[in-house]
Length: 206
Image (tube, rainbow, N blue to C red; front, side, top):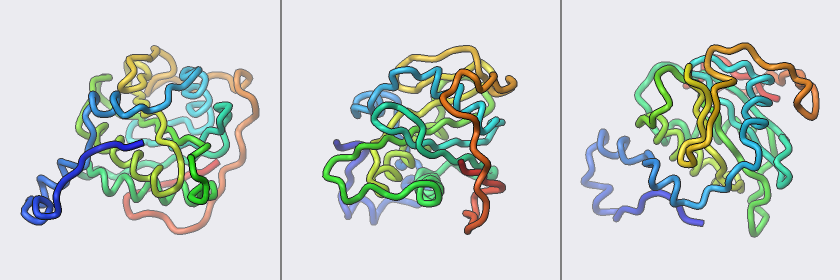
C-alpha cells in the first residue's frame, strides 16, 4: 500500500525548510484515497481510549488493534506548543509504539493496525496540524511494521474519523469518561520509565 507524496531528490535539495515542513502533511482527499482500513465500531474504540487515557486538548493517544479490533497496546502523551511537523510527530509516535509493543517488520503483510486519537481545541474541520499527524502516523506505521489505521479527532463538538465522515457528539474534548463497563477489560496500570521525547511533557502507556 502506498501513501503520501513522492518528490525528486533535486526538488528536495532546492526546497526551503519551511516548504519541506509544509509538505509533510496529508490532505483529507489523499488520506481518504489511501485505502485506510475502516473501523467496524469506531465509537467503541473512541470510548475505550477516552476511558483509559482521559485525553484533554493537545493530548494524542496512539493505539494498536489486532485483526479483531481488540486493543493490544496504547500510549498517550501531550505535545508542547510548537509548529506542526509530520517528521517530528512521526518520531514521537514511533518512540511510543516501540515502548508499548514489539514491531512486526518480519511479517510480509502487516496484521496489527495503529490508530491515532488526537484531542484538540477548535471545530471538527481538518487543519494542517491534522495533516501532519496523518503523515506522521503513516510513516510510524511503516517503520514499525503496522497497518496505518484511522486518524480520529476529539474536539468540543465530539469525535470524528477524518476522511470517513463518521463521528459522534460523545465523548468530546471536555466530557467525563464513560463507564468502563462497555469495554472488554478494565484499564491497565500505567507503565512508566524509559526515555521521554523532547516534544513530550508527559507520557502514560497502557
